[in-house]
Image 1 (cartoon, rainbow, N blue to C red):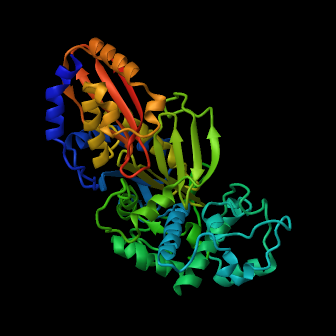
Image 2: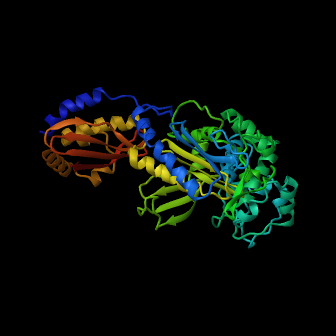
Image 3: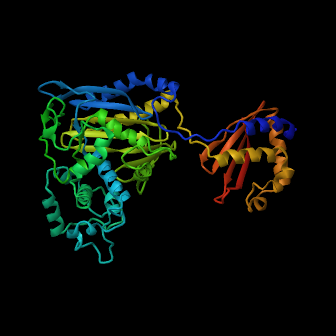
Length: 509
């Protein structure tokens, strides 16, 4: 019965096997998916409007990115309160610590060019760090990677660091000459350090021969077409520049803007929603890994490396979604980026930004090809909260699925091989598709019995689905029956060619 049911399906499946196609993010590859997301825009607009009003934001701008395109924007309030200049997607806000990932990207580009190594001691590039006194004599020196991941041992320095933007390179070097103070030895824990990223900015200068501003502008911003992004606020057209405010005594009080300096590498960039969406699209475009030609200013593999959770720092067991549903999450610091995974196994990558006068945040969901960004001109505005609400809303109302990883040719081949064996388990040992462990862990007579029982429950076989890859050597496919479906899961070995080492057959309603 099994053999009869599967024979024609096997021939159909083998005859229609397609060569795996790699996915390249493009605009609106799925019109229905975009249509579902578009339907949420009125709700998204209301989320930002209410949050801005409730929290006294003078002005704000936000954007939604889908499959590499900025598909929706909004502006609220004013970038200049006395002159009532409205905030729009073209308004330039200082994005504070969102700058850090661009500094990290520049470091990786220099690494890719062979000009530095991430595990080098930082003193190789800044000799003034050579005689640094650590907490104990057995401490390892601060490395470039320590600086990227906030594991250099410097103390958390947000209140102090936020006031250092205009400090000169000479003043930064003088700090190291005098000696810095440590809260931990390098490599012994996560502690957020603006000093660390200012130091990376100076390393960019020492290695490239250009200031970090010029190097990032020439090698990242210009190639991406981010022509309305600035380091020095006096160079921003007045009608586009967002002024920063603090809410004091029931009124907005303008905060002084600091000039560009050594600490701008940790938080000085000024940009607008339209420009920054291009940078976010670059991060989304790094997925999935593929053979396509590189089109960005930095290798896709290096961008994925930036996004990896290098320094796990928090498990929030009592976390809740914005709707109040309990949903624990784990978070980590990557290279100039924050990484998080929630109870639904969804990954979020981005960064917050906060300075006197400003608050911002961006978040992408690489598996889903979507992202959100918002800027506000209020001191330490919690832009991340409405962004999270927006992503929660999109996920809840659209029920969109993760972008599908393309199946490898070997997964397709082994699927067809397994179909032949499932139809007749007496051919299993002679098939040559199983690894040397298989028949020590699985027994053909028992597999034959389990298969017969499963097909009896499923009834007449109607179709065989495509392979759903979990990675390039693990996946499953569904055999659809009249009464139930059968899920066939398998894992391949690291041999060449890969063989089946693990196999499961389960009846599904």
